[in-house]
Each structure stands twice: as C-alpha cells, then as structure tokens.
Length: 464
Picture (cartoon, rainbow, N blue to C red):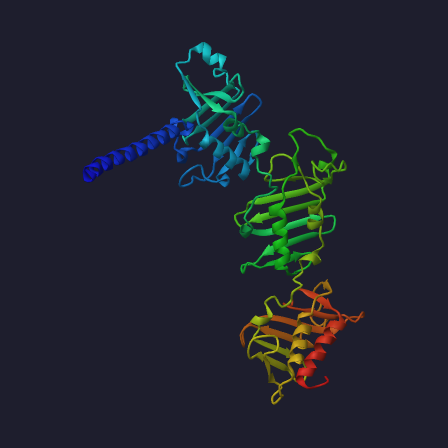
C-alpha cells in the first residue's frame, strides 16, 4: 500500500508544481504586457528623436550618437527646442526610467468619441512622441485628465484612442518635464585633450597658453615659460565643473550682462572655439541667482554662477609658473650633478630612501653621513622661483649665457636628460638670476641659493 501511495502522490505533486510555475509565468507575462513600451512594440535602438509637448511648451531631443542598444546615455542627446544645449544626465535618466516602467493599472476598451473627449484624449494636456531617423512615430503617448479619484491619468496611444490605459500618477508625472529641468547645467562641455590654445583675459592680465607636441602647456604671453601642470589641471577642472545656479529667461535684461570681467577662449585642434565669459556681479546677492552673471558658447541663454569662479579665473600670469622645478619624485632620481667653476659634485643612488647615496665626484671623496645627503636633497627641492622676469636683452645680462655660475642636473638614469636649473649673477636686491630652459627666466632668493650651496660644499668636502 505504501508503494502505491507514493506512485499516486508523486505525479500529483509534480502536476501541482508545474501548475504553480505556469501560473506564475502567466502572471509575469500579464504584468509585462501592461508595460506601455511593450504594447507599443518600441525598439529603443531605433529612436532618433523625442518630442515632449505640453500646453505651455514643446521640448525636442535629438540623438547625436547612435548607441548599440537602448536609448543610450544623456551624452548621446541634445535639446534642439526651445533652445539648443546639452541634456542633464539625472533628468534624462529619470525620464527614461519613468517611461520604460510605466504600466497600465486598468484598461478601458471601446471608447466612443464622446468618452475620448470626456477623458481629455482628443486634446491632450501632455504628449510624448518617439520617432525614428526617418521621422516615423514609434511611440506616441497622449495624456488626458486625471481620474476622478486623482490616482491615475487617462492615457492612450495617438493612433488608437479607442483603447484607454489608466496609468498611476507616480508613473506619469516624472515624465512631465519642463525645459529647465532637463537642460544641462554645465557652463561648458569640452574635451581638454583636444584643446591647443587658451586665452584668458581679465582685469588682472591677459594670458596666452599653448600646448606643445609633447602635451605640455607653455605660456606664450605676456611671458614665455612652461606652465605648471597642476595649475593647468586646476584651470580645466574649474571650467569643467562650473555649473549654472540659475538660467536667465530669453529676453531677460540685466545691466550686469553688459559688463565683462573674465573671458576664457579655448581653441581645439580642429579649429572649434569654446568661450566662457564671467560678467557683472549680482548685486542682489540672491543665493538662488548666484554671485556673477555669465554667458558661454555652450549655453544658449545667460546664467549665473557661484562667486568663487571669479577669483579662480581672474589670476596673474605668475600663477601658471612651473614652481616645481624638479617635477618627479625623489625616489625616481638616480643621479645629481652640480657643475660650477672648480670641482663638480656628482652623486648617485645606491638603494632606497633619502639617505642611500654615494659620491662619484670629487674622486676619492669618502662617504658623508646620511644626514648630509638628506640636507642636500632637502635644500635642492627648496629651490623655488620668487618672481618671473623677461628674457635678457643681451645673452650675458643675467650671467647665464654664455657661461653660467652653477648648473644642477637631475636625472632618472645616468646620462639621461632630466631637470636642469641654471644660476647666474645676483641683481641689486641680492636675488639670483635663474632659468631652466633659457626661454623662461626667474629670480631665486639669496637665502635659498646659499643654503643649497652650503649643503653642496659639505658633500664635496670644500668651503667654496
């Protein structure tokens, strides 16, 4: 009897489990069938344009780069109406998510023209249309009025108003966006690696910067010297991260817009120009409106920005100077040579750490204490420019050409080109003339130079 019972029970159990799985699958299929995008048979990779129409305005979005699948990222899209600008990533993603997740809570079929009018579907308050590259409507959703209990909206597809869908308010309202909500708030959008020339003009100075083939930036006006990589990174970062606090509606008139305090003009390798202007200060000091008015080649209407950007851009040429004369870490240095009249000093690394050095020249010089090497390296890295000066009118004016007083060579490998610092004469104030490349020239304080020379002489075993 026990065996027969098992023969009967097991098939029944299998049937029950299969029925449960089948019912779950049917329920999921039914739920999925309620998705609006599925009912419209929408293929996102075919969408090239989106139009959002309300009683107040029309928003048009156009895809710029066809993604491999889906709607792509916000970087693939531009607003082309009511103005021409980029799309806010957060707002675009929220719009797409609301659209793809919207489901019908209940269907009403067989609507008469009177019912269509009653539900507001014949003259919809809001409509979203997605089109292919050829302009064919792939998805055309019209939204009428709210249901009497205000929990849902009456919606339908524009080409079949006889079938109505009740979509919950929380699903529809995230799609009802305004132009100001979906527009990108960045003041400028560009690829810094494409930039070849920058002109920065302010009440402080006018600065010209150019990128060399090596990728390094140099200042070409009003002085000529290598620009600090850190300062260039900060300049690009300041412009990339600058965002609008508020936008000025077209036709808005403010006296501050006629003023010009700072102007940034960047040119890419293909000749494209990017412009940003920081204009008059917002005297109302309304935090919602920002500290300064601004305009840019990226944004179609004026906007306001935070106060800090004025100080970050209205700077003097000296801010771009390559203050770190030796621009690689201590642990990468392999050899250091100090050349001067008389006996040169040459040291090389023998291991890890600040103290792992040996003296190659002068010949026969015994090893110094670790502290002597540490003091020497510390003094060398303390060499900083005090001020930028123009190139000499005559080669010998600064005592660097044709013959220098002291030259420091720092290399990662023996005989390999690295950082070089030349010292010449002292000026009337006691500062030493110096250069790295014989293009840009600067002054170094007497205290710093003498401190370095003292540590140099200790290693040489001399009192020169």
